[in-house]
Length: 276
Ligand SMILES: [Zn+2]
Image 1 (cartoon, rainbow, N blue to C red):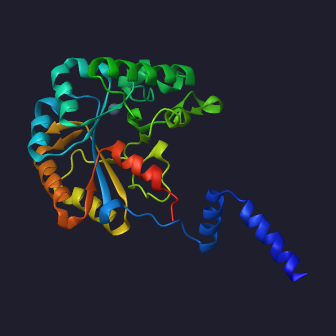
Image 2 (cartoon, rainbow, N blue to C red; image 1 turned 120 degrees about the vertical axis):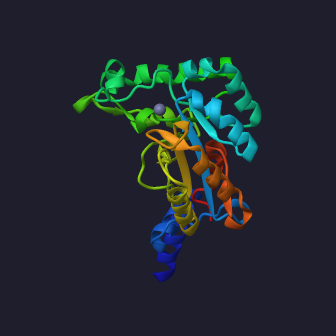
Image 3 (spheres, rainbow, N blue to C red; image 1 turned 180 degrees about the horizontal axis):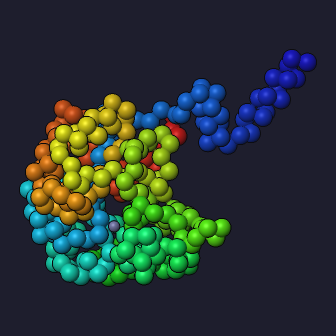
C-alpha cells in the first residue's frame, strides 16, 4: 500500500511543469526562490527621467556624459521634437528611450489633465496613445521603446463599475512598465515587471537618495529613481549636485551596485525570476 501511495505521489510530482514544481518548492519552504544579481552585485539601480523636459537635454545631458552614466528617458514625442538634436545625442550616448504616451493622460482631478482625463478613456484609445508614441519615437529617433512609464503612475481607464486596468496593454508591449511615487523599491523575486515601482528623486538631497540605495543593497533590491527637470533642487526638479554625488556613489565598485537602464535590468530580472 505504501509503495502504491509513493508511486502515485511520484507520478503526480513529475507531471507538474518545471515552473510549477519550483513554485511548489517555494511554497513548501515558505519563501520565494532565491535571486542573484550578476557579477556579485548586491543591488541594482536605474535612473529615469520623465516627460522629455527641456532641462534634461539642456542641463542633464552634459552632466550624464561627463559622469559616464546611462539613464532611461521616458518621453512623449512632442517633447522630443522641441530638442530633436539633443535627443538624438542621448540615443548616441547610449541612453534608453522609453514610451510615456503621446498626450500624457492622467486623472482629470489634475487640472492639466481635465481635457485628457483617464476617466474618459477606454482601452482602445489608450492602446492608440501607446502605439502612436512608439511609432513617432521610432520615426524621430530610430529606436523602438521597449519600456514604458505610466503617466502620473496611474494605470486605469474609465470610472466606477466600468474601470479597467491598462496594465495588460503594457505587459504585452513592453519589458517593463514603471510606476511613480511608489513607497518601495522592487523585490526582484516577486516584482511584476508590468508594474515596477518607481521612487521619486526630485526635490531630494543626496543623503535621502543614498539611504534608498543602501536599503536596496541590504535587501538585494532594484531601485528605479524617477525625476523630471534637472537643475536646482525644487518641485519636480532633481538637483544637479545631488545627482552627481549619487552617480559617483553608484559607480564606486566597492558599493557593489549594478547601475543599468530600466531595459537592461528588467531583461535580467525577467530571465532570472523564479530561477534556482
Ligand atoms: Zn510624466
